Image (cartoon, rainbow, N blue to C red; front, side, top):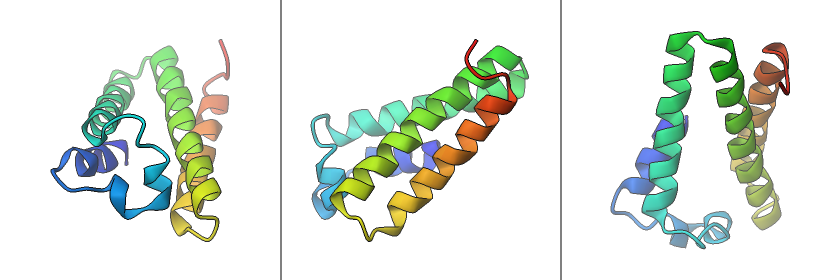
Length: 105
């Protein structure tokens, strides 16, 4: 999900101008947000492929922070947005994985 959203933000389309929620994130350029999401997405895939428990825990913790912050931003900007709830549910899944992998080290 991080790679797909990041790839969309890297494309030469104006995503941040189309949504009040994305406008709140415009303190960094879209390409930087996209590059960071793609980077963290690939990092998560490497952690899953490696199978090393601390890496998977770290990737789940970072994923939780990403999805939770996007969900709260969307909820604040557009409370009736379905995207806010999708991001918050993704954050819940990442939090559950983080807890199951041992929580904070």
